[in-house]
Image (tube, rainbow, N blue to C red; front, side, top):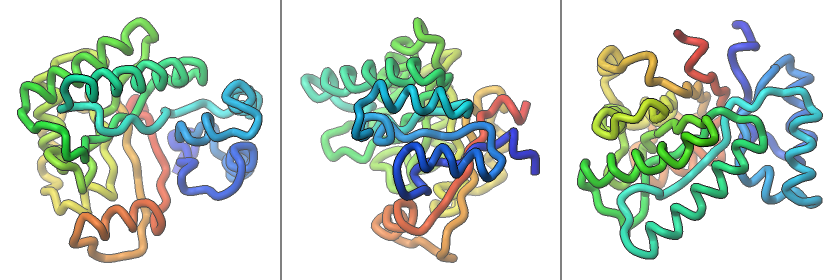
Length: 228
């Protein structure tokens, strides 16, 4: 495997941001998928975290994760737009070309396809001035979108050049989605691919999937360009 095509995900590491960056370099990786928590939770502040990332020499595969963005209304939607703008600015400061957004789990969200497509289209438009792409991922415990096939329908409906998919093998296998459906996806719209290793053979309930994803899995991420 050519490690230049992949980067580890910092959510699978313990320790400080600097130790995560050092571990990735020591393992031979040239890029890394960052969590926003690595940046905002840095003891010396966000600017110090950004400086540490840039000093590491690692390319940032992407920044994760914008949660529960689509399907809201009123002040809840406005609040998420504010969060999205802040994450896009962070993404830009890190030199990342991709922001990962996962499907909503919010009980306050609606599930109408046109509404979800409109909201993700809006998110993509916010990212255009910063030249950032939005990778939309179907969480296997998502409220309305829990398979990549549904996420693909929404991406197609939104029809924005900088809006595509993130495909995570954990969520695909946890949902039991037919792998043949991958043939229906335009490869040019796959912005991130996440390969996950996890302990269990089955994750039958949403609670099992959440627990496994957060505590018993590890993953490496590839920016979709490397597959085209």
